[in-house]
Length: 359
Image 1 (cartoon, helix red, strand yellow):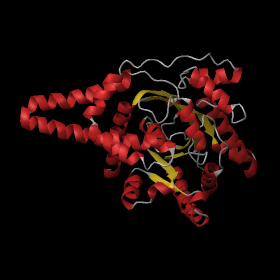
Image 2: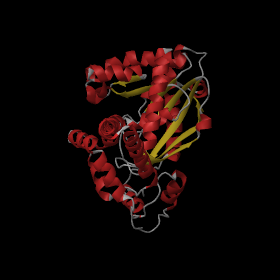
Image 3: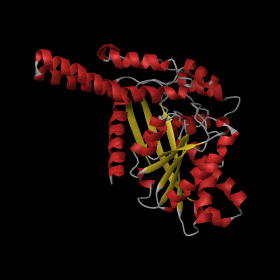
């Protein structure tokens, strides 16, 4: 009971924080999620640890996650992540010897599914800001079919989840989360031999993901297509329309970036939040992968803004009285929310594209 209360409390806190961080959060296909039963969510992975936050906070089920093992290195972080149902998955880049640890993780996953619970996994095997669905690894099929082999009576629903950001790593951004239709894993497992079942499940998930998020085929035209979409300042979160543009080669002509008339308000917020901003600047120098920018920025803002606004409000209360201090605190929060929800959002620029391609 205590763990459940802790999980739900953190989930609510994160959900509120994401509303302050994203200009608009679009959720589609939520009705596809079964209210009961074992579910594996197969999610594309453009934006590091902030991806599972969006998927789970707007998901009615309590979820377990498989995430890259290197984020569990520090004991305190490992304990915190484990309390929120996160589990490490080891990759080849973590060392060949480490891969044997996945056997224990897979056993935990089998038990989670047997208990009719849910599991979130990123089957592309790593994060990437490229707007394309990379070939899927077979790790998630091993979990699904391994559970069905152990527990023949088990029914497992596989749901593809597409995450699309208007402009990753830039505050604020719009994001669209789309839950696909249920794939009956047991029906696939029982219909053919294991090797073919693996390919069939991977194909079904990949096909769905290519429709649930913006997918530009990763060929010689990828860069040109992305630059055209960015120059046209398309709304990437309108996934169906953008995918239609790509398929039919009907990308609009270049469009000027909208003028952000609220930019002065941004600098006011920056001045009022100078301490969290300085902390961010300090830590941002150590970010090795562009996909982790949003994760780090969101984490610092989530903790730093309430603490420093509270401290500054306390100082005002001490010198000017309770009324002034409380007015300052709530006004500061309101201004951040107003700017987040009202400012103009543009598409990614070619500079961001270059950094993403290089990483």
